[in-house]
Each structure stands twice: as structure tokens, then as C-alpha cells.
Length: 511
Image (cartoon, helix red, strand yellow):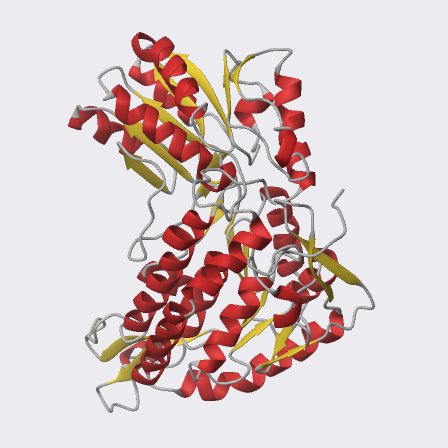
């Protein structure tokens, strides 16, 4: 349980910033009307950050109505006009970078160096990318494919998009949902996780301040069971985009099916980290620790299963554990902190339970406990390495979503790739080898939406992010995301000016 109190002023003054409410509808903050409240908690201290009135169905209806009203004007703007607005938006985000970094660290427990150097710059870059991409919504070139007609393809916005974002990267996920949608001419209602709404609200405010019209971007802060389900089921919402667990994604799909919505799902992951026996061991160890611990392991692409070819296995386990033990766990706002808390005590306890159950069938090499002393009020958990687990065990097959890496050995290349593919998920993976042919084989045969070679985690705005199998379908970021947020229309012109066409005889008359 969290401790009552208030966040210290040097962290982020959330209660002052959101005194008018935590819903952002038609260009202004308002209070939710569900009749319930939710408290955002600083996971580093257990202190209360913001208590707000959550969104109910009436708030969702108001947000969708605002988005629907804004759609004709925004979709009718030229690509150049939308591009110019997004360029201004990127500039406002850059100007407010430190504010965003502190708010994100406060609500999530991320170290400031992560929010300053990864979350916020990545979001600004994403905005700048889509400002340019807005001018390149192209279809197939015109051509006379039938001989008697000229055909071309239009890409048109879908309408009102209803999106649901998770708590692990609230700012970046808001950007990934909102930017391609509005660049393509849609309007949007976003529901952030009720535990981490601050930066989504700030993102929408920044858009208004950049001159993006009221109603183009709306935020409803509330629970998934109330605000989320109502948004997905809403008849005026033409598309749903969801990022979160596979279990919840299945429920989103069920609800969306009733109104035959366009659906985009980015779901769970269990990324393999495949180390061949010719790999640079130093590089692999450094990559494993960084890839497993980024965002305290609360990353759907984090390295979670390291498969190491037997000649390197023991050295990899020993050196990875030694490096994990040097990682500095502490206050996210302290400059030397490497690893902050998990997002909540509930999440910390969930991770700890996975590790505790694993003790009966595997070896906990390092970590496996919450720190004591000055950190015990926070949702902290030490970096943890588990070895000697079976492939079918819980810690290998299930998404733990914490600072836990499991290491298993393999013998042949074929076995390593087979084990890498042996979970329901397929979001991301990496392979480590000095042999270009070996590495290239891994990129072909590993079933995942992204495969890194000799690195793990980097993402860029120009390239797509999305998964295979139970990790969902559809792409975030890159020009490929426009395939999610546009409708393709075939336009066909007759070129003959002939009243009676030859093909008419298949319906009536003779040649």
C-alpha cells in the first residue's frame, strides 16, 4: 500500500497543474463525471501525487463528440497545413522537455536520465518525423490497368480513433497513438492508464498551444472497465488502437468486433536474446543487462530470455550477474540512479512472486529481493538473474514485466532458433554473432516484428514497431503506421465514352 503525503515540489507540481481536472476535451481540462476518484502515486516514495475525478461514459461521449466535430475541418486541411501544425507541436514539446521528463519520472518511477535521454527526445523526434510524413500520404500512381479505365488510389482518414495506451511508457505511447492518426487527418480520443495520465494530458495541452484545433486530440483518464470499454464500443469511433497485455487485447478485440471497427493491437512480448558461440561476449553481457533492465524491465521488447550457446554459457551467467550487481538502484530524481522502482507496489509484488515461485525449479543467481533501508517505502526490486530453468517453466513462457532475465543454454544453432520461437509471443528479438551468415539466418527464422543483430532495444521513428503471433498486429511509428490510420480507396474513370460497354453482354443482350 502507498503512504499518504505529497510529492516534493522539486519533483513535479501535479496537483497544481491539474487542479481543473484530468480530462482534456475540446481543448480544455475538465473534471471527470464517473463519481469516483483515482490517486496517482509516486512509486519511489509511496506519496500521493494527484487525486482526480475519473472519466465515466458521459466524458467519453463528450470527447468522441468533440473529435467528431473537429474531424471535417482537420481532415479537410491540406497535408502542408497539418505538417506545419505538427512542426509547431514538435517545437513546443522540445521547449517543455524538462517538464515532461520530470512528470514522467514522477508518475512512473523512471530515472531522470532515462526520461531526459530516451522518452522525451524520442517523443520530440516522433513528432518531427510525422510532421514531415504528413506530406507523403501517397497512393499508387495513376494508370490504365484495364485498358479502358484510368485507376488511382486515394488514402483517406478513417474518422474518430479511440486509442488506449499503457502505463510503462505513457508519453511515448501517447505520441505513438496520436501522431500518425492526426498526421493522416483523423481525430482522436486517447485513454491513458489511469495510474499514469500526467504526460498524456500535457501532450494534448502542448498540441493546443501549438495551434492544433480543439477536439483533434482528446484525453479521457479513467479505468479500462468503464472509460476504456465505452470508448472501444462507441458507435462513432471508427478505429481502436490498443497497446497492453495480450489478455486485455483479446477483450478489446471482442468489444470492437461488435461494431466492426478497424483494429490495431500491440500486445505482450517475451523477447529472446540469442547468443551464438562466436559472439563478442563483452558486447553480449552489456547488451543483456541494458536490454533486460531498461525501464526496470517494464518494456514489451525487453530482453527476457537469454539463450546462450553452451561454450559461452557459464561465463555469460557469471559476468552478467556481476554486472547486474553494479547497477545503482535508487531515487529516480538522483543523478547517479540507474534503476528506479517499478510502476507500483502491486507490480513489484507480482514480479517478486514470479521469482519466488522460480526458486523451486531454477537458480536465482543474483537479486531476487526488494532493497531495504531508505528504499523500502518504494516499489523497488533488485536486478535479478535466473538460470537453469526449463523451457516450459513459467519464468520462460510468461511475461514478467520486471528487472528479471532468465538464461538458458543451447547446443546447435537450430536448437537456439527453435527455443527463441518457442513462446506465444513474437514482438522483438536479438541475435549476437560475428558471422554475417549466422546472423542473417537468425533474422529470417526468428518470428518477431523486430530482430536486432548485436544490439537490443534501440528504436527509430523511421522504422515500424509491431509484432507477430500473440504480440498482435499492425505497426506503430514509421510511414507503415499510415496503413493503420488510413482507408484505401480505388477510384476508376472510364476513358471510352462508350454507352454500351462490351462487358454489358455478360448481363444483358448479345455482342
